Image (cartoon, rainbow, N blue to C red; front, side, top):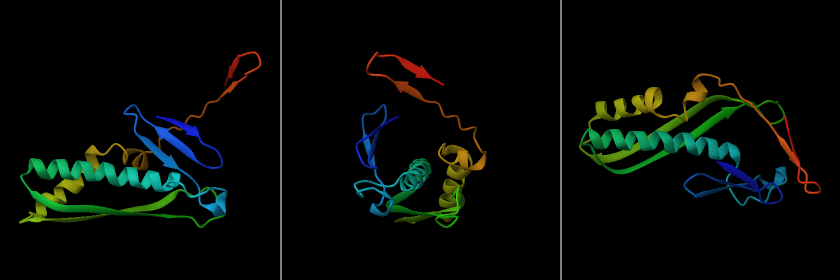
Length: 146
C-alpha cells in the first residue's frame, strides 16, 4: 500500500489492486473532511475483514443471507490523553436471512475473530512496529535513509 499526501491533511492510499482510499482529518484537526479518518479506516478494515469471512463461511454452510451489515465502535482514551490506543473494539454483526441457524452464525463470527481475519491479529498480539524514512533531495538527486 502506498499512501500519498494530497495537501492539507488529506492522503490517498492505493493498494496493489489500484483501488484508492481517501483519508482526511476533521476541520478541528486541520483537515477538510474529504475522506475517512485513519482511525475510521482502521475500524472499517476490521469490520470488512470480519464481514467477508462471515459471509464466506455462511455460504459454505449453505446459509441464505439476505441482508448483512456491521457496526463497529472503538473505545479510546479521551482526546488530549496521549497515546490513545483502543481499550475495546466492539463489532456488532446484524444478519438477516432465511431460516438462519444461530449456531452457524455464531461459529462463523467466532472463526473470523479467532482464526481467519488478519486485520484482528495485531490487536491480539502487539506487533513490532518499525518506522524508517528517506530524505529525497531534488538538487542532487541523492537519497538518505535511516
